[in-house]
Image (cartoon, rainbow, N blue to C red; front, top):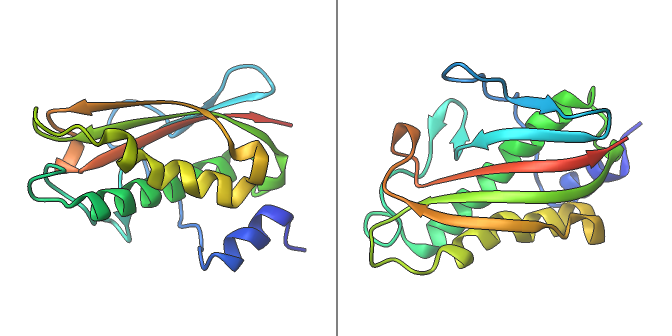
Length: 156
């Protein structure tokens, strides 16, 4: 039986990938008590390849950066699904998303980039997808990724 959240993903044409393995000394997700799931930062990886590389506002357009943030959240959700034994309906609330945008010092549209992830969280989870958020610009990210997104979720 497909759950409600899996149904929404299917309606959006999204199939969650196998979660990416960590590339250094960390884990993809961790529980802080029984009801708080923290997911490590995920980059815009698809089929083992980083799809959006370079600096936003220079090599990467605002539109592509939003798509990168959306893909990052898809990868965050893949980690959530793995952490919850495949049952995304156990998510009670998207508590917080954090976004890191690789950009030059003159770029100021970080919030619009991160909306790619935030908008998808609300599309997938509805009202429980509304979350607190931080979005910051950074000089570089692993693998020259343009965007990285991390998340925190209240779960059953």
